[in-house]
Image (cartoon, rainbow over all chains, first blue to last red; front, side):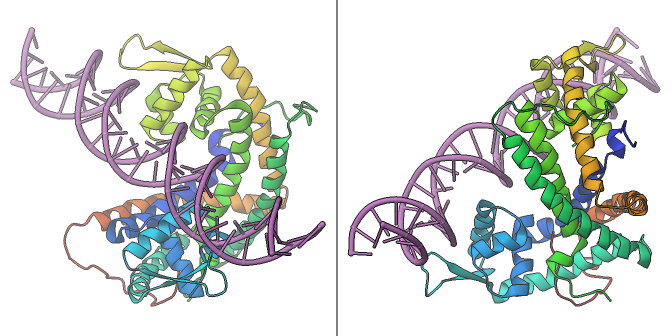
Length: 175
Length: 175
DNA sequence: CCATAATAGTTTCAACTGTAACTAACCGCA
DNA sequence: TGCGGTTAGTTACAGTTGAAACTATTATGG
């Protein structure tokens, strides 16, 4: 029983700390030097890979919600970093792609991001990196399933069993 | 060279995805069932451990900024979940502690959080869990150092060497 | 075909968040 | 004692965020 946790021991909390720190570090760079939000940078990164996507496809690929994508895209278009043209077969859709300037910006920022990743990982050996990759994949997939479950549990409208699954009577947790 | 990354391969992005998923799952529960924000829940969790802390100590222990803590605390006091009394020796400070109701609430939420952590980790073997713990610790410490560095780099007001450390000329990155 | 539903993108609004400024209390040293 | 500097907590404000409503267009099925 690894019950009786403290906040500092609690995996979700530690993950959140780490992730925030990492995000802040990189965001620092592209925000202050290039005036990009995180969402905007993600849009650019994804469009560099896929050349041309619709907003909905961006939503799928970046795991951000459509309002966020909309706003990011609007800002990028205003700055001339993105091009937009209507899809010929469906006038609701519009294809988005990087402009020359967008590509140029990407090639300024991407190396920095990669550099950061390298530096971050430099504290791990090759084996550890492989383990990390593997573990994150597993956790992500599993967490995605759990999210569904927990979402439904919460959504249940009636009494049923408010606190079934009597669980360790213990101490803490965060996040 | 692990250059030429795609967003889905980029560690900071993957970390962010995982962390958000995990946070959302748990937050789901204490937000919808108990009307607690993440910060509020963290405050409760920490105060359950330490019985009595000042706001400043909470800031240190939760890694959230003082305005966030202030607002969380105010909300909790209004709901009668927290007690506040002025420190005798320093009238600026005030000791915060859980009320009976606060403790009761904690004992409703904590098991759920622990249960979630258990479920999440159930997709890993014992070895993997140990590795994960270890790697996260290392990364967190290292990331904390890097954050300082990158912060300074950005803050540098002059030209100096805008892009020293010529790095892989490559492809992508997110976040 | 027309009516209904679904989808893509956009707008609105209210809540949340962080930065910076502010107030009150303490500290230290002359 | 009293004045600059520091610290604890609070407030104000401006920017960001997400849920839900809305518009325009396309798909469906009777």
